[in-house]
Image (cartoon, rainbow, N blue to C red; front, top):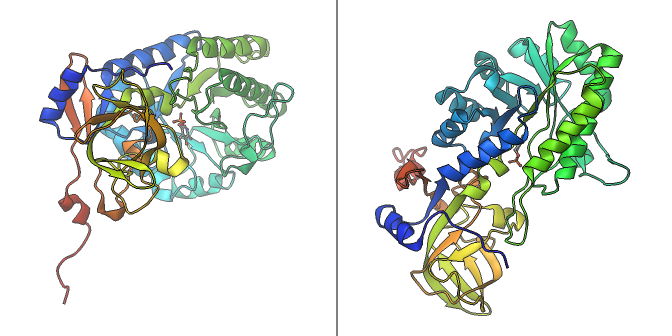
Length: 418
Ligand SMILES: *Cc1c(COP(=O)(O)O)cnc(C)c1O
């Protein structure tokens, strides 16, 4: 079985643990930067390529700052995410506001920041006009519905998703906003998630380029950008391979050469809004074994819980686990690795083959850099833990402290109880 690497030695990790008690997430700055550069390089051919990092994946200003330095923008979908982008001075058209079911105040904030607003529904045109005004630049999210691509490969089930406009609505929508004064136009879609096959993204690019041509022919709308969304998957399992970004970039380039250039639509900017692939593989949840339990199964209880990482409980998602110091031991035990919630879903692994685990062992749970800490919640009074940044020089900086009971009780009023 392929090995999942760690960015620190056992000795280095033990030093970190001496200073920062477990559990914590730790993010590898160097790897995040290298990967960001690789993504940009793969699309260097494209006119003004931009990746808008999906803030929801890892909403920490220190991470956003790193990504900003690498030339990324921010894909926001809530007020808090807009404010986070603003805090690190990502503003204007470096923000893509791809929201759905959006309240007025969020549109207003997006307008205040001069973000690119990407509407999720045709009815939002009037809503936006009423509450925030129609901006000069506007984009729409396309939902292609029951979709077959390249003959018969079904690339997801967009017709079951709540997002986006139908094709018919899309054509009406561009006319509508043009009548209302919009002058610059974008087109967006996001129809796959955690997908490891690059061909699906290349197919999406073909579909979007065809649509760009149709919009030009039928409405005279000249798109300024096509946003291919996020959804690039990561190899959570050791036997999986990461998406070949160079192959992906080259595939989209070929589609561009084949369709956009001959149609006279060049230059058309290509945007992505990936979250998972940008930070996911470069985050690690470090946790210590508190208890072992032997009933109908063998349990290992750790000091982290679903409040730190709920993907396994929520989706049954696989996250690889390394037992520090036992990397080369035979995986001849079978354990459920659990947190302490009164909720049987609070497990990081179910019937997982692992080496013999002892109380006090340090476990590293891999690929927690996206939708990890971010999805944490406080059910059962479980607190969310700290986030650390492993910097390029090997030093460690705490970029979010652990929650305290005071944080948990902050919204309660303990006066007036009689
Ligand atoms: C979640 C989301 C993304 C990012 O998805 P990843 O799978 O993390 O790449 C991008 N755009 C929108 C609209 C999203 O909701």
